[in-house]
Image (spheres, rainbow, N blue to C red):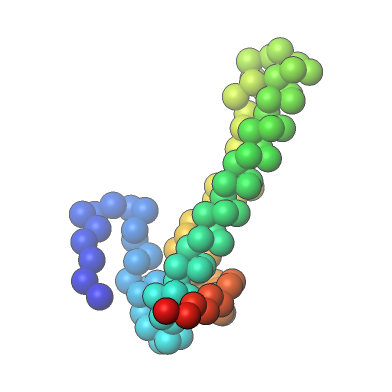
Length: 96
């Protein structure tokens, strides 16, 4: 696998992830399933945090609470999820 990061700090773990995926024998479908699961979790966490943040705005007009919308998943990157995963979240089977 060849990839270019241009020194982006967000991709510093890319080499580790590539080696782990290769060692685990993951195929593209397994990686895509894990990526979709991660994205779904992030979107749901964002929606929940946003809903909670908007509720706080309605109940308390303080500027400090108005923009206090954060997700518990903000500290977990996709790379961290892939490194910690033993197996993909979902196994997709397709008939083509």
